[in-house]
Amino acid sequence: DIGGIDSAHKLALLSCLAFGTGLDLKGVKTEGIDHISIEDIEEANLIGYKIKLLATAEYQKKLLRQEVSPKLIRKESPIAQVNGSTNIIAIEGEEIGTTIFSGPGAGMGPTASSVVSDLVAIASRKSKSTFLNGDKNNSSNRDKTLTKKSSFYLRFVLKDKPGVIARLSGKLGNSGISINQMKQKPLPKQKATLIMTTHKTVKKNLEKALNDIKRLKICEQRPVSIEIEEI
Image 1 (tube, rainbow, N blue to C red):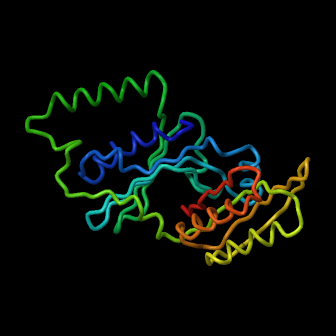
Image 2 (image 1 turned 90 degrees about the vertical axis):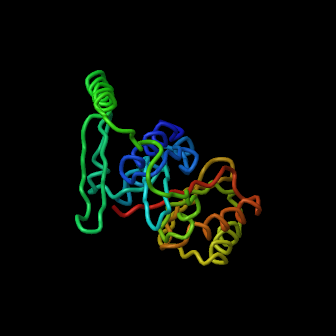
Image 3 (image 1 turned 60 degrees about the vertical axis):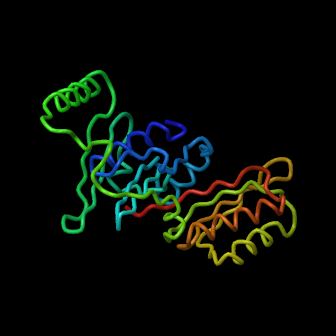
């Protein structure tokens, strides 16, 4: 699921089941993993994380937030332990805390079982179902993630010239973003990779800083930004 599209469809359906809201695929903010490199995976591993494509949904105060995007997850988290075709779902409630379910998510047996289960459920319904239509008012809130405070992993491929890092750091500082860790690695042809993690910040501030950095014309590639999710 390189583009996150399959995860977005599944998330939209799961939101209907979990919250009783209407189907809202267009409201799923979707980002894939096509821009993530082996270097990002290796660097995340060095600081104790794995990169996972995470689909999350939250319903509060009649607002439904749905997002699919890559996240840095701590290695010891159950979500970080999932590999191959295994799927995992974490459900968080006010009184029960977090409950985790894990099992096979692909293959002939699991797929056939799901299809037959859905057919039996549809055939056995005696009254009109609200599934996909929903019986709760909901309004997609695509911008709520912009106000959530998180730490971020950043990777830049820069022109290896004097003053470049200072200019980049200045743009981050102007947006109120504090650097937690930073590492520079030289590359051929007067280029350098700069990898850093930030202290917690608001995503909209980071997006503004990244746009300002792009306008400096010091980047050789699109900057990579991945949220660090503490689960």
